Length: 228
Image (cartoon, rainbow, N blue to C red; front, side):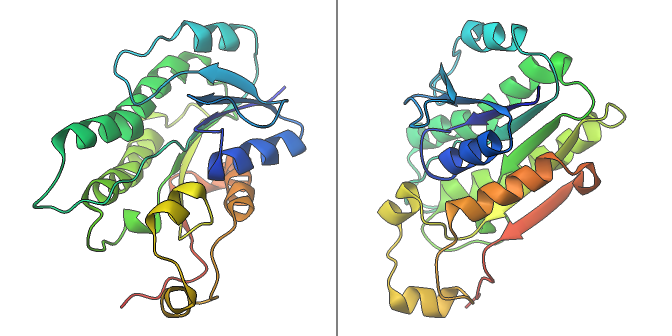
């Protein structure tokens, strides 16, 4: 049976990804601090923002579930900051969550990833461009693309593929709490004049997990960003 392991699967895009894979008959686990709302999603309680998080619970889960795996690096955090005013402690914590922990997970799962498995990264429209006031988030989402490209190279020949899915402004609790969104914003910044739905990103993640031909692809899903 195929297994999807989603970081940050307790809310937002992560929760939508978990549901999408469940609907397709996959076994699904969320690595997150909070338990997922979907009862059929197995909760692996790990705070990926902390260094030296324990691996025993994840390894025990993997020991009991063979088959292909889709590892989805979704967990992220956001804090407004600028290049000349960065909170070093926050940046270190966000780096742990969004770069160091994905690297550790890749290493843990690597011996278990049979042909047909995938390692997927959630980037952002801000993986390619920048806006004022989001220094740490932009830097780390740029890193997501780099990690995916390096993953694609290093797993070459093993039947394991990698993609980076880059959502635009999506209707998640994190986005709604940190972005001033009104009709003017939508009209001036998004071609379709609405937010991306988490389910739209989840659909694309599932496509990537089941499409080895997309190996190495960076896919933007932002309804047409208007750059000003």
